[in-house]
Length: 353
Image (cartoon, rainbow, N blue to C red; front, side, top):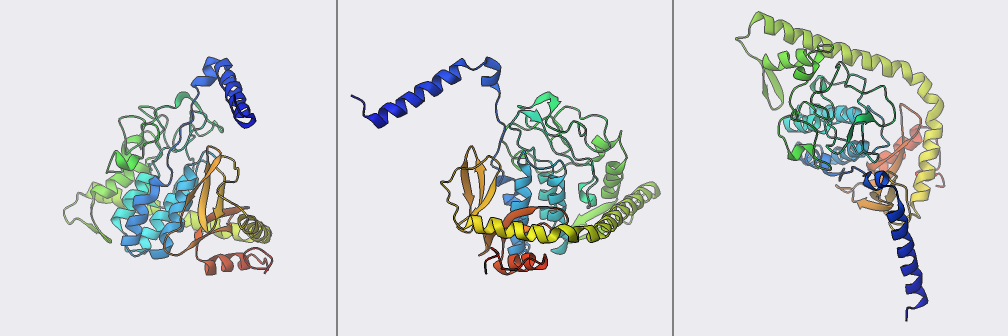
């Protein structure tokens, strides 16, 4: 005879089974395309540590792989890849970090609705990312895009052929849930895909053919045709202009940023206070990020997946600087305190100190 508890569990199971069996066939076949997002930047973080990045590596790694979640904006993945390359350049233009950042920006993003993910429509800060865009997962519906329908082709292109491909994986889309850096070693070039667009990718390719890359430096070959040298110069000028425009935009936005910095600081404090009582067993919403006992946590399939911060740093909610909101990432306590204090918020990490 079933105990009362077992009876309840059996009843719930039978009800759930009946519900699933009664669902329309098209609903049962719809699948969520996801991945272990932390794997996308693991190799980059190791290369960063090897290059001497120390405590700078993990926060950038975590901030980058969270952009592969469906909730991220179309350009957040590229923005974080820019940050990865910025640090690589600070560490002697580390070639391995740059290569892995170029692969990361092409990694497919999660697709919980099985639709294609829209492409970024803004040029990157770093010329190394020109013409690069993310692949799609093979299980995507290649007739539709998720959410915003304006970014259906990468910047400067009129089509992606074959559908779902990217410069690093030109044969087609990436198998569902697979990391691109396990399939290919070369990030490819944006030139082949950008020939019908603005030409930025082809200029970058020309510049690459005119140079010999070494770790930490780039030397121009002495025997280079005048045409190639001219193209390389044009690419350099375009990259410089892009960087200048980005710097100008940042400067112009600095005044308006002050209006929301204080609120961002207070919101970060509120989250840090909430995280102090949060447990890994608590319920959560897919894509939600949090800090649990000092470790980074992300919700997947209704449960938190906890990833320890490396290098003696901890997880904190931090205020954004250039836009409204907060971010959850690994950082030193001293830096987290300084960032919150810089917004004008008082009371330390939680607002109660």
